[in-house]
Image (cartoon, rainbow, N blue to C red):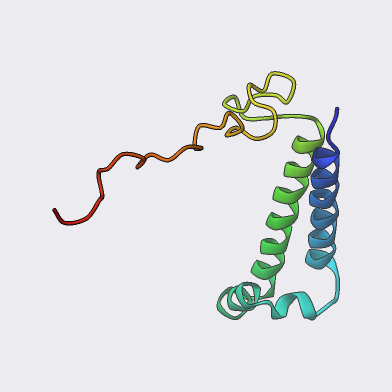
Length: 108
């Protein structure tokens, strides 16, 4: 693995998932002051708000584990099989003047 982005993103997702899980079972009031969570709490009660935090935790933990295990959608190419490395427009296709003729010389 040449890149550290997958372990970094996967670890961050797992840490956020653990934090959300702690919010769902902990006695703190601050996480329930977020706009969306507060709206759920006011409309459906604290139990629904805790379930919302639990759903966020499960989604984040699942994503983190999937990222760390190397799972990718079928349409994504692996880094080893990538066709282009670096800048795709390094072939100098856009150099040169397209209007080098006398096409725009003004009124005649």
